[in-house]
Image (tube, rainbow, N blue to C red; front, side, top):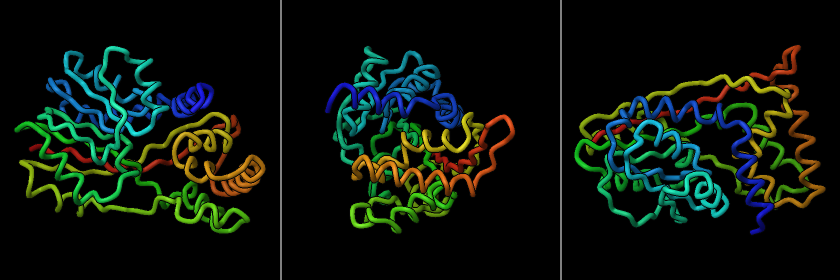
Length: 259
């Protein structure tokens, strides 16, 4: 992995850092993160969620875990005093106990929540909290277009199976966690992010997240063609205001489970 690639990945994800960080602030506030003395940031990315966690709990001992070397490198540069580990977040061997386990926009990439979430609860101290936030936007036009274009083009074989299709309902999470926890709070919020730059800004947003598995297998010409079709689809699906701003609706599901 080149330094240029690492730098690009970190810059791409943090282009819209203020908008991406707002949900984790809302989650940490609901999870009473200020009381935590030991915390795990599971899927820490480039460290923006970890930094936000430290804003809430500046004296906590925090461990950050991510399975992307690019993201861990960026996180270590950002927060050199924090212990960051490169590991598969679904099989991280640390035991805790933790006052807080934060999983901000990471578990949607991990399979088998029926096994994973109970295992995370077991890593909590008594009274500790599991705080989870995941995009719930697979039915939004921006994601539907990714799948439709992938399935209808010369790249269809390359892109077969790369889409994220797993969906979990709030009722399923409650039923899974309630027998294991003293309390479980689940809710859904739709943020409406104003993005300067119209549909091109929407593309840049998803280049740092949802588009990555679709673009990674393609060569340069295929990427250009894919994104041209994606841009045309976005123009038909989203309103761009006279000042060039596009409003991106972004539903997210939140969970705070207390052991």
